[in-house]
Structure formats: C-alpha cells, structure tokens
Amino acid sequence: MKYSEEFKIGQSSDKNPKIKDYYKWAIWIEPGTNELSEIESVEYLLHPTFKQRIHIITDPGTNFRLESHGWGEFLIEIMIVKKNEEKIELTHWLTLGENYTTVQEEDENADLEGKKVYISYSKIDSKMAKALESLLTDLGMLVTTGSNYQAGVPIEDYIENAISLADLVININSDRPTAWHQSELKFAQEKSKEVISVGNILNTEEIKSSISTRNFSEHTYGTKLKTVGKNLKNLKF
Image (cartoon, rainbow, N blue to C red; front, side, top):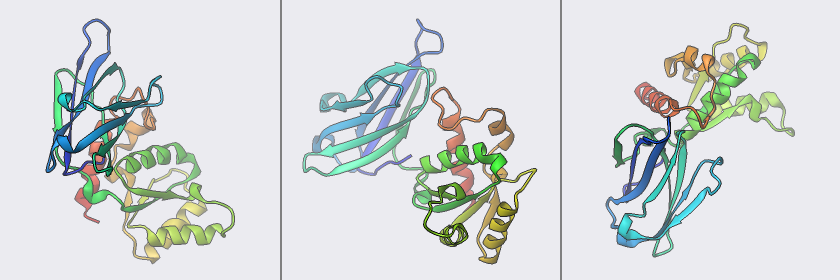
C-alpha cells in the first residue's frame, strides 16, 4: 500500500445486521503534516465489480469521506488533488471487520517500494507465481518473470538481464522443475544474487489450497499482504 506523510487515511467497517456477511464501510482523509484546507478534492477508485467505480468527494467538512457497503476486501486507489493542482496518489487496502477503525499514518512497506524482484518458477507453478506477483506488486515492488518476455530480444538475454537488475530472486520450489527454471537459479547464483524460497515469506500450502489473485471475495488477502511485507522486511535485502 502507498501512503503519505502529508495526509493520513482513515477507514472503518462494521457488520450489516440486516444482511449476512455484508459490511458497511467508510474511508476518509485525516491531516498529516499538511492541513485538509489544502485539498480541492479526493478521488476514490473502487474495485471493478462496483457499478460506480470512481467517486470524487469535495466536502472537507466530512474529511472527504466516502461511505459504501459490500462483502469483499480490495485495494482502493486514491488521488488527492490539492488547491495548488498538485496530485498525490495513494492506495489503501479496505479491511472489513466488526467495529473496525484505523488511521494509517505511514507506509509500513515504504522500504520495499521500487525494489526489483525476479520470480523463478516452473510452468506447473504458474498460478502460484501469479498470486505472488500480485502480492508483491501491491506492496509497491517491481516484479519480473519469464512470462513478461516480449519478442525481439533473445529470451536468454532478457532473463539474464532481468535477474542481473533484480534486488532479490524468489524461487518457487517445484516437484517437477524444468531445465529453464534450474538455469535461472544457476545464473542468479553466478551473479551472487540473493535467492530465497517462496516458503520463507508465504504459506505456500495455504495458497495452493485456495489460489486467489487479488480475488474480490478473498477476505484474507489483506492479511497475506501484511505477512509477506513483514517477512520481506525482515530479510533486509
């Protein structure tokens, strides 16, 4: 998630007593190092399943508050437009719970933003790789895999360049590793790259049992995101 020192993001949620597994929720802006009087408007971009995805709030009296309801957690993209026309882009993971309220003051994963990661995997583990790629991208990391290859450059050169530029290589251990997968890991080791197993940052058995790539109905995605972020920060790569 992406936050700012200038403004904080507040969010609340609570169960809807009339509809099972439904929640009422709200998101708003709190002053940080800057005052709300500097803001012209706040734009919230919601999940694609919402009929009205974009909401532009201009009322500072409500702290630019948006209220809605639903049953799934997702990433909210936020654009704060200041009166001087400066724009601040933020993101916040909508958390649903009973009597839940939080004010996010800082980006817990600021140290991870912009870090380059290469995911090495065999074709049989492509769903796992996709789920991991989504988690890392939502943490602000720059993710590359062999599947990002585009014609025009020899694939060997493309992958070797991507691994050379990576700050970290994550290996998805496979029961049936391909020769290509093994060659990627060998090249990473030759370049003295930090190579870690995906099991060091994520419960792979849990992911295998319920693969969900930013699934709208996946209430535990936010928890997975926090877990991966915490484990990666502990690596100090």
